[in-house]
Amino acid sequence: FIVKYRKEDLLEYLGEMKDMEIVAHVFGTETDTHLLIGTTPDRIVLGFRGTVSSKNVKSDLDYTMIDHPYADAMLQYGKKTHAKINPFAGMLGPIKVHKGFYEAYSSICLT
Image 1 (cartoon, rainbow, N blue to C red):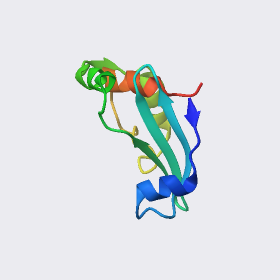
Image 2 (image 1 turned 90 degrees about the vertical axis):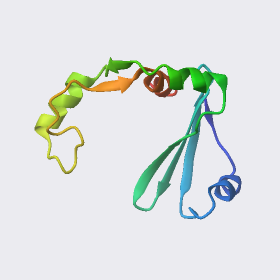
Image 3 (image 1 turned 60 degrees about the vertical axis):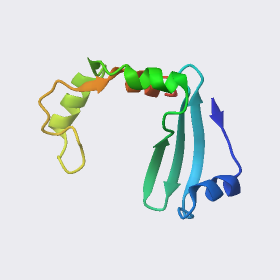
Image 4 (image 1 turned 30 degrees about the horizontal axis):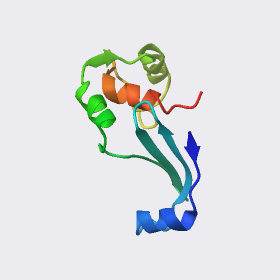
């Protein structure tokens, strides 16, 4: 789901970040994961809500480290780009991720 809020309501919540434009609030009901996407004149900001529900706790506690599904592609990209612009440059692998966080993130990805 993508939810749109009144800008005034979100700016009140964000406090001093008055130059931020909220683009979207994305959430997944399966994992109760919430993401705010915002922009400022010089950056994109992603903010995930913290743990507030039993579904979130389940994701937090599923801390098995799994291979990232796109690890090979990320490593190949890292070999082709400069380290200053790519956090994967110079990595040898394997790339592991927290299973619960990855599943929570995947539940809100737009395809």
